[in-house]
Image (cartoon, rainbow, N blue to C red; front, side, top):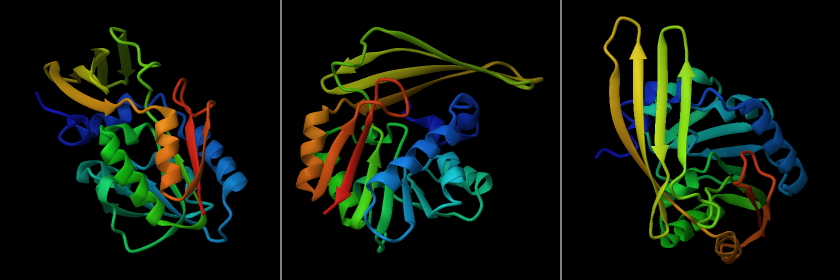
Length: 240
């Protein structure tokens, strides 16, 4: 079974299936948190796992923005969606950008894709190395193991004029990893209905362990229960 193909060969459907997200509202919340916690004096912002760039669309007016993602296909779309932002392909687990930032964001639970605590540690250490003293890191985590509902059915739909999409999955778990086999049905005008299955595996990281990793990386860290999406919260870290 193929994995994460929505981010690669089927990237053109990404913005459609996630059209329900209010990126402007989420970006405004992030701006408020940055203003509250940032102690450095610059305005350089790095968005890790930026996807198609929609958060950056609403952050670029206040910050000098860079977006990185592992998917060239998503970055190609981001470059069309957002002007005035530097985009670069990079793996979050081993960032080496040769630059430090005042703000680093990693949103929409992208951090879950590192899957293991060892990679989570190396990723957060990498984030910390790219932060200026007093700079702020904002991570939107995936669910904890306790919060993740095994066996729960889920459906997301998109109903455009020329394209209709239905995505369904049932939540599964393997060890400390959530497993989601996303079944897509896509109907396009004058085309046969397309079906594909896309597997996504995300680590179920506990808040206390993640906070400990952030503190070990030299960050003053805290967890906010009220996050951007229900049940996920936000992790905030300030570089000492």
